[in-house]
Amino acid sequence: MPLVCLTDFQDHARERLSKSTWDFIEGGADACLTRDDNVAAFKKIRLRPRYLKDVSKVDTRITIQGEEISAPICIAPMGFHCLAWPDGEMSTARAARAAGICYVTSMYASCSLEDIVGTAPGGLRWFQLYVHPNRQLNKQLIQKVESLGFKALVITVDVPKIGNRRHNMANQVDLQKTLLLKDLGLSAKGNSMPYFQMSPIDPSICWDDLSWFQSLTRLPIILKGILTKEDAELAVKHNVHGIIVSNHGGRQLDEVPASIDALSEVVAAVKGKIEVYLDGGIRTGNDVLKALALGAKCVFVGRPILWGLACKILLRAPHPPHTALSAS
Image (cartoon, rainbow, N blue to C red; front, side):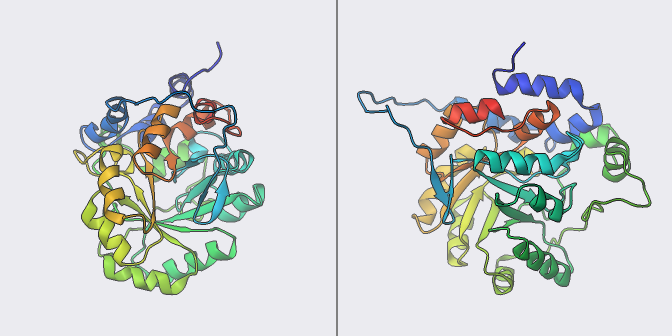
């Protein structure tokens, strides 16, 4: 039977992955209310169609941070793609390049940054950073990704500590021992994953620290995890280049707004001074349209990319938005 929508990919991926891996990918914080709201909130928004417009020629190209992409649908940062498919992030990078879209590579990628860049030279990549307490390590990593040709630095701001993920607790998941060593087939003594140890995240990071990051790099800095007008205004004040409206896929703090519900507030607050993007709950071309209509420059897709990897099917070059989503 052909796979015709993302639900089909989701079902097939569930069949192919171990329970601990599936729960790790799909799990949310606490009761998963925000995770589920991310999808449900889109379905409460209705379209107001206008007709008798010439749509014989459709051009979905846009620019983000000055770089052209083929459609306003990009790949959100997620760690450990090798849990879904053996060559993991390398497949993701090749798919993104083929589709002509941006791929935000996670700091917790299961392939080396050199391999990711080498497998898809010329692809548009941003790098997502969890801030380490050791400033020197942050500096070295930022300099490395800039030298490798990454085009933006995405700083995740909503993880002062890892969220309370009940599925992992119920499965007694130790990320290193259960997922990475078993499902990825790595040895405990030696592995090729550069950030495999899940380095600690600095809980003290604050707005005043942004100037230090800006002093290190010429890359545009994007803040991922903004949900309120107050933080959006502070982002503009501190001269960042963009915001990803995001609740971390509902994995961090439960009972916060769905991303799409927070979007209009953030867009209004920035007053067009910086680009605003969105992730969380994107499942159809209609979802993409709704996000764009409410002010997002583009959207970033998360879990469906891993479903596609688990099904051995890569993201294909998009035409209309619904085609790109159904192919992922």
